[in-house]
Image (cartoon, rainbow over all chains, first blue to last red; front, side):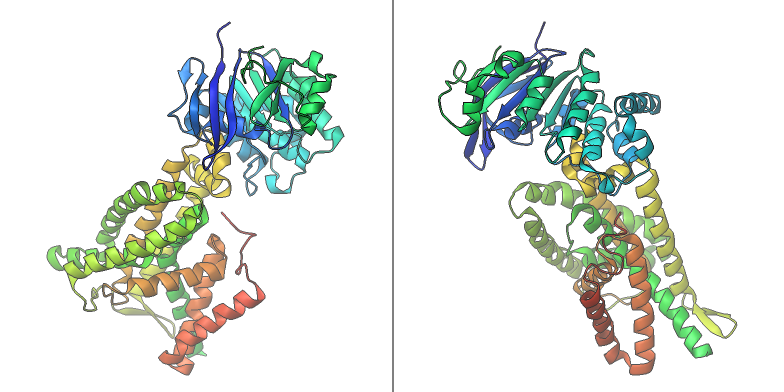
Amino acid sequence: MPDLLRLDAIHAGYGGMPVLRGVGFALAPGETMAIVGANGAGKTTLLRAIMGEVAISAGSVWFAGKALAMLPMHARVRLGIGYCPEGRQLFPMMSVAENLELGAAAATRAERAARLERVLTIFPKLQRLRGRLCGVLSGGEQQMVAVGRALMGAPRLLLLDEPSTGLAPRVVQELYESLRALLGTGMAILVAEQNARAAMRFAAKTLVFEDGRIALAGASAALLNDRRVIDAYIGAGGTAPAAAGQGRI
Amino acid sequence: MATFATLVVLGLLWGGVYLLMAEGLNLIYGVMKVVNLAHGDFIVLGGLLALTLFGRYGLSPVVAFPLAAALLFVIGAAVQGGVLERILLAKPEGELRTLLATFGLSYVVANTSFLIWGSQFQSIPFLQSAFAVGPIAVPQGLLACSLLAAALAVAVHAWLRHTAVGRAVRATAQSALGAAACGLNVRRLRIVTFALGAAMAGGAGALVIALVPFQTSSGGDLTVQAFTLIALGGLGSYLGAWLAAELLGITEVMAQYYLGSDAAAAVIYLVFIAVLVFRPQGLLGRTMRI
């Protein structure tokens, strides 16, 4: 199957300070992948680089056979990449319904209605919150809106940045259970998580990041109890970069 | 009692005029968190354009209103697209740099206007009579400006609330990153917003010059006045700006009548300081943002 997303040895950072150092991997349609690692390992920067929020200094990002280098974020979204950025980035003074509908800004009225119905099926809790301002929702409810809003764009690839941050364990479990409804729909999902266990239980494959490089890559089931994953988190330094930073699994 | 009622009515009408001059600044600040220091100069430019149209072609300020608004829309779009967007991208301190850039723009607009229109105060004799409502004399020009301000405020509010572009603008105001993640072209929305704010300033100038004489250097004072008003109302709050405009209008008219013109400006700024001391976020700050 051709790659939906492909990263070729990308380097990216902030103000000349490198964060990602030669990261490369590929994701096929329908695949799920967890990006885990310690704070500062480069998980969020990776998602930002894919979305064009952070400039890439070397390497390239391809989506559905198209190079993304010159495209601004909104154009990448319109190509079919759904993005839930760190901190959710909802519109707090707008209602849940308005937030969700803005996620389908480019869709027709009929498409918007159909997608809204689907999102409310995945997150039934949002049905009764439709008229509520997003700013007053709980963290878990806000996260559901954030994911729902990204789904309103009918993406082929969904990027989730730290969806469990600030949520109680029960809410995290609830969120990932809802996300399971997306499995088998053909949508690829890339989830960057500090909560490694939750992400690895959800995704079929895992990339473990360490110091801006891919330290480990493999099937999540195999890596879940791998001592080297823990080492990567605590910075034990015992993990060798997977094929010079390349994460082809 | 009739005098007091007249003062209140005049104050409300002047409040409408002040609102007319501040609405564009409020829109731009509300969406982009940028204080456009050239706002007053845009008002003056719109007024002087109306003056030329009146002098050369006999066009009334009402006809000049959309023409001035259209010209300033184009200028605003060029400024935002060509200058401010590039500065905003230059992080950190992009917002501070836009402030400095609009400060420079203020001088460019004022001095260019000076070369075209000279330095003398100028006005348009339009709707200068008054009509009586019981014991109250209502100046026609003041009433027209005030009604237009109210209509514009309602129109902008409705546009922001009930149109797709308006909702996108509100979304951008609340989270530019969230808006981009929705597939919205944030850069284009900011250009439209700034252009619209500039157009509102230009249109306001075309009408207000019939009430208040302008000279090319009046822009700075008008910017301060407009900024005072939106800060008093709660930066970015539409209803707050309206309330603040009426409060300032009534305060000014009352102070002028009872204390004299010289004291009026001081009284206005005393009210401004008092509100900020007891309510730093402004009258309706936080709760009524767009």
